[in-house]
Length: 298
Length: 193
View 1 (cartoon, each protein chain N blue to C red):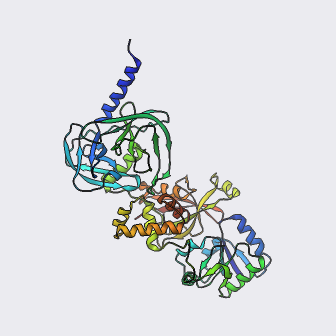
View 2 (cartoon, one colour; view 1 turned 90 degrees about the vertical axis):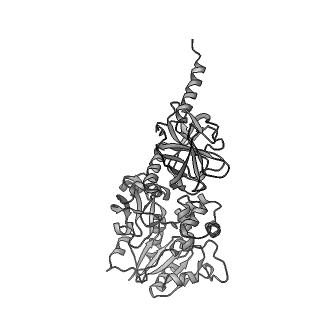
View 3 (cartoon, each protein chain N blue to C red; view 1 turned 120 degrees about the vertical axis):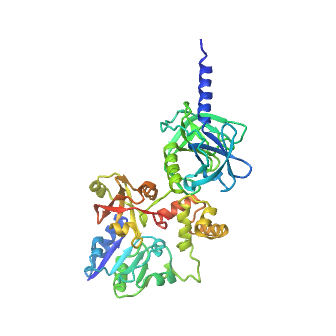
């Protein structure tokens, strides 16, 4: 008869082995190297805060081989950086976006050439959006019971199949660690690979939250109690060009409710740059929809 | 007939002001969309918006409307002179008589103010004054999650100067960290999105 505990344990070591094949050492700061994930055959995704120098960056592969890397792009707001190798030698990580609270997960790190390190626990929360201590906005994050050992930043959070659920970083919170979900992290990595940075949408408005009266909510067929009152429009900016006025109250963009400045921040993600979005506003107590071509925030 | 626009976000305040102003038959409260109609120029705009946020707002010199702030915050006279031709300030507990008097004065191009709400910047510091243009830029970059070093690089200034700006933003917005600063900046309408 097989011992279920042994099988369980073998399951964990197998997950580390699978995830470990795409977990690398990233040596881009003084003294303590950190970890990275193979995003493509020649691209490594890591935490931005562990890349403190842009020259003499080394990536150590699971087989111990050391390769020089360059910075392909950085997004300090989400604490992600993408490094490029001269050769296509990596095994890109397999990702999964199937994350649930209570799920058994492992945080993996390869902080030095000595080999893999791992820690395990369950997913305690999936939350967001939230402002990080750096000031940026994180759309979603995963909290786990895993222990963030030194050098784990940039490494993957994996499920029991060894599939990457996200990238661990201690750079966005003080004294703890969180995981940036793979879906969002990979989307940012894609932008970094293409443009070197993450574009952010821009309307050219300054707003303040304003209450939407009960009766108006009914007219709007929306339940949100606040919208964003436009107080300033950039001269010839996207919003003004699109036909917004000072005094309009923004209530939704592309059908997504906007009740708080962070909602607007979030709605103006990189995908919207250069595209037309439907901005729903309250004008003189009546709902109107205005098409605005989103600009790029500098 | 004096045409008055109510630029207040709270419906209760708007209703209250309408009621207070209804006693004077020479004052007419107009709805916001009239602003768009050039035929219907507004004479006086009443706003309850924090003046600090309006200070960053480029005023339209072509507009002849006087602006009346309903606020218990102190106004900097120099700053107001710089930004508006015709302006006034009344405390939020002003009576109908005071409001009507102020509107009539503003419509005649006079400046109106309650002495306790006005000060000259030489004599008293502006406690939570508006951010400077540079500070607004720094706050915008903070909202993107940039570290001081990256902000310095992006603006072509030294890291030390960035630190100075950040600390000044903290003081002006009465916050103690970056997250709060960004939140206050966005909620106060200081950061353009």
